[in-house]
Image 1 (tube, rainbow, N blue to C red):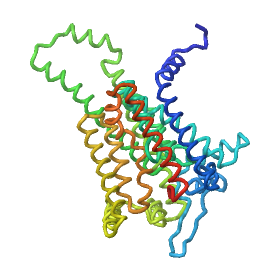
Image 2 (image 1 turned 135 degrees about the vertical axis):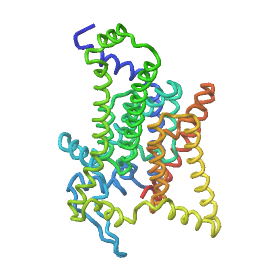
Image 3 (image 1 turned 90 degrees about the vertical axis):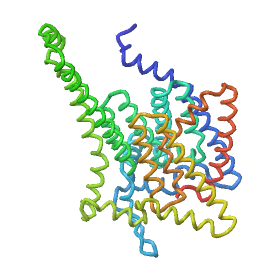
Image 4 (image 1 turned 90 degrees about the horizontal axis):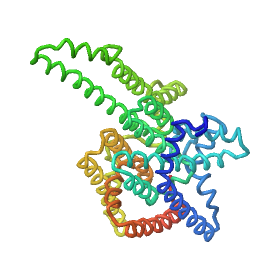
Length: 417
């Protein structure tokens, strides 16, 4: 052993070795998706790289990175699309990478997304392994990779970055690293509006932890009331804890509280800054979203959108597909609850799902908006982990091939708005 081999480094190396099969499998699935996209795009005389880095939201992010905030587009119908709708962490990273490398802003966005997708895969593995074991962890990562809209994980979008921050924040909560959890939740809140889901998970876990700690503190006093006091035991107890029993628990409570306070600062800070920048007060960000005709209506607009599909044929088939898809998402969440997933995972997945399904516009984006809700995949990961290796590989391989073809078709067509 050398002086450079610290316990932290050894733990990190061991964690990477445990995650290696998941990360290698993830990289293989994503490579297959990119190869399919390259082939399909070439056949249509399009640039696969342009599709990944210079369309839709990717253009808005690179514009923020290059020019800052203040750009807007006024549409003929009066709508105003402002780049203030896009949270700043991804553009900040694009600007930083552009400043220290020869990469363009678009290239930087692609690199950030590539690295973030690997970090997200590792984070998903860490969470799933902690809850259900290594095999389930590998399966969870592979299932996330083969989602039909998995190609978004390779785009210069913020989904991969957000999922990485969310997954590692949840892992930090599950392992009691409250300052890390709060700091990562802060960064997630600077990445996407759905960062509120990470904040909610941290707060729910923190409150539950405080309640458990209070119950533990109360339980001994109840027992001691029914028994004669033992001065010797009391003295021994105090000797074992230099601060009279409040040392370790007190410090842990302090870190927990600080982590909870850190968690909402990212989202709150950006929303308040937008309100100040626009001169419309604390709710100014909602006006920005309204300019994009985006909001939260409890799913009413989406329900109408689905219902309208059944007024003609063959659009009724699309409507049926949407109903089945929403039903599957809800069913998976119910299974997560029945399997008693840890509270922070349930809160996080529930908020992400609610925000995705109940948004009032961009209905075609809902599969993409659900991409960070990886805890929904854990029941499927458990089922896949129970299969024999050959059978599991056959299932994942077949779905990966279908996902690659669908991703190439989707991105060469209407793609994500």
